[in-house]
Image (cartoon, rainbow, N blue to C red; front, side, top):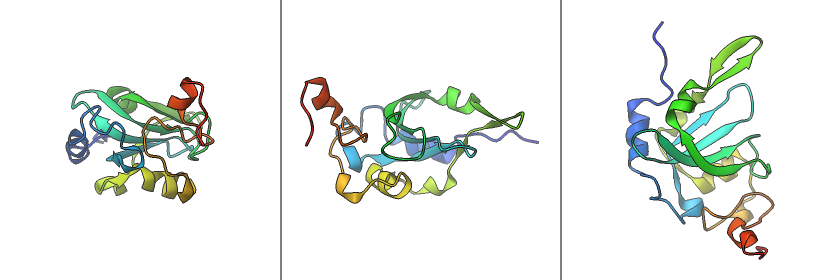
Length: 146
């Protein structure tokens, strides 16, 4: 049986349209070109940028909820995602790519439709945390977002 690839050519071509740092500051308007998920748990990764080689950037949700304190924006290795396996009942299974992402979605759409964030909680910057409405940049400066 042929080995399935996590990232097909069409997905990689879509991702290459958004190189690293190309969506800085776009917040909910950032384009999500791919979704990787654990089909046996709530883990979801929404990829927004790709360097064309191995480094990807996006949002990781550990539980599938927008308000999980373990959610974060960050960098991912394409190779590591392709090699990650989930143990289910003694069997090692790969992560999967959501094929419905042939048409990219905005981060705002993802947060509202897939992670159940209320529409009133829209953000304007990638540096805003989705956890409890705290702006992580403001928090780092000792300010609280309102």
